[in-house]
Image 1 (cartoon, chains in turn cyan, blue):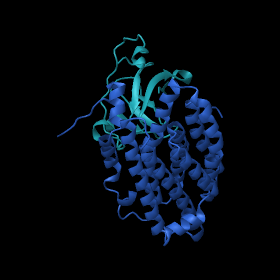
Image 2 (cartoon, each protein chain N blue to C red):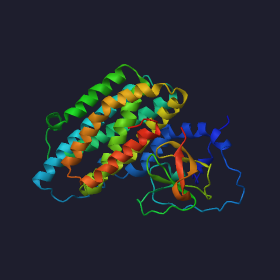
Image 3 (cartoon, helix red, strand yellow):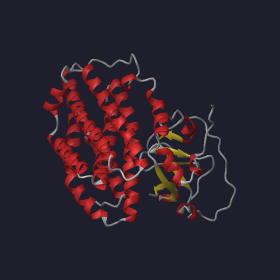
Image 4 (cartoon, each protein chain N blue to C red):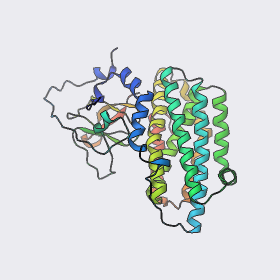
Length: 98
Length: 259
């Protein structure tokens, strides 16, 4: 089945920076997915280029590569499907795509 | 069998939904934060002795949480029968178990605080607005109105519980804090389920929005009033309360319900 979010991917073919994800102590999903999430520490918590904040449940979502506008990510703790978008000041943010 | 990390973001949407609604996903998720915490707390964890005033306030608050959790238990289990598909039925079964656990750990905490007859205390201290909300939710479930019941329970009620428990945990005694933090982890799934399922339905049937907006208008003051009273009871500073409203309003705004 075609995923409309996949069609929204931008034509940015610069190589992606890869990230090795370590365990973060996050324990609200099955073990095999835990390193893809971490707790958000509040306003002073600066997100890395491979991270976005879930607007629904405020968990930080992590990827093994830097995120770009149009990327799809999933928040497993709250079961949300999200798309990365450009927010205020060019900062990346996740928006819910029902 | 050892299972290495699996990048969840590459899953096809259908596979993602199948995975997160499954009993297996739920079981492995709660194992992470409940397996070593009987009654939702680290064994041996102690709380300082509370003053009589603080104890009274906490008992009243926990009694009202019990009303909310009982309502959610009855609501989630009742909705299994008319959930539109298999994934939703399985998810609601896991939610019903979560709600039963919440009720049990809260009753256990009340017992630790010296409450001998929890049923009587809950009856005596229950907030009237919350009881009215419970009756209204019960009627929505009885009428097998999926969208309305889901909105009332998994969006309005769960979203408010999520934010109130998070707020309360920040100032609670260590034992109550652990109990509440465990509940919040479950609530993430419940409110996410409600918002996402409803969001998908509204995208295909936008006319539903008018009917749900009417329900929201009726139920909002009941829940907001209840939790305002709860925060008053807990002496939550006024400047911490707008955050509660913002979190809730953000959720309903994403679904297209203006204030």
